[in-house]
Length: 482
Image (tube, rainbow, N blue to C red; front, side, top):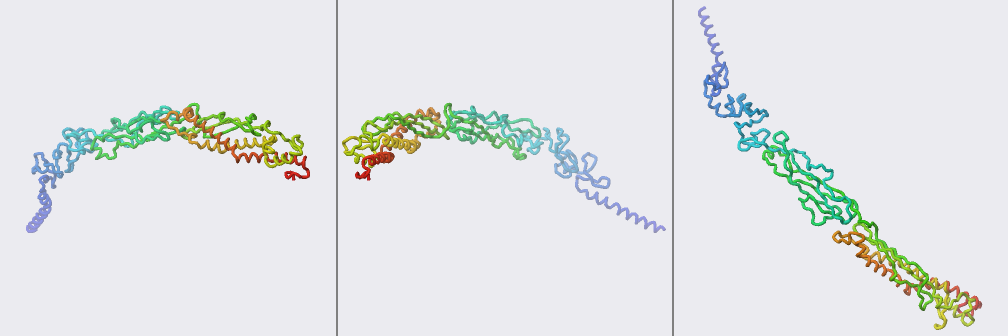
């Protein structure tokens, strides 16, 4: 019995040893001086003067195994052995970043809330520029205005940029608190449209321009307005807010004007209307008929009309032309029964009327024989040739002279109005018009025209010759009466 008790006691002793082994081993393994045995487990060493252990390593600033807030520096908090970046003791900071109290200080912008600027150990404001800010702030519908929306041809007007500026909005931290001073604005790519600049071209820094046009109608002047952005100011923006931008895109601006003609001027194209009026009082001098006209009496009207950037002239002219038979110059033979026809001259008269188709003399020195109606046909043909030449060749000649079209030059004042250009070129065009009439007269008096006129009267003269034969030689003894 005693032996059994002794054996039981030994067994229980061994069990107690075995059961106490983990505690002995764990306490033995708390080799970290910042850990100590506490209630059967290793625990963080508390440097409160009541426990043993060397906590120098704990208090050295290492990132692991922190035991107290003081182990994390002035602005750290110790939680579960690690230092956090927040500390409720520092100026009420609660946004997840380090505090900004003077006690904490900063070494870089990442030490500051909202990545604000770190300058001399102190966190300061950092500008963050708004994206999508209005490019150009303006209350005007049109950023360009014209001093006159309906200028005359070549009239200089002033094109002005609107009352606007480029204010880029920024925020400090997370709140909008201010706007910047206006960026410098540039006025790029001034475009004069169909017009031109009066003087030198406007430069980038100019917000006004002097403009004019030698063409009429609606025209548009435009410019591209852009900013020359000021500095971004803060490196923290460049690093942590790269989308922050104050270099705005260009904004187009334009204005339309309607250019009109000066008072008294109108539009049209060049033309020439050369007329003649037939009268019956020619000057007869040694001929059976006459067509006379005094080229000094050409009456012309010359008007300048606007057409697509130039002046074109419209010319209307007329001339009285006298034409009729000179009955006092010849002996009238009406037919074969005329008393001036005799048995001795009928054959010569029949020959003259049927072969010559004009006034004639039997022997070249005797009386001139003719017929008024036939002569009128001859002279009428001369007039027709003259009129046809005027409306054809002479008109073409006039239309093709260089002075019929004059380009408008806004730098030459006499070319900017219809009256001005007429004062310069009307005399030259008038001379050219008289020359056109002179050319028509020359053509009418040419040998070729004379043949046409004789042909026009031929049948009239031939009928008179036939009447003479019928009356005096029905049997055909005269060779012209066969």
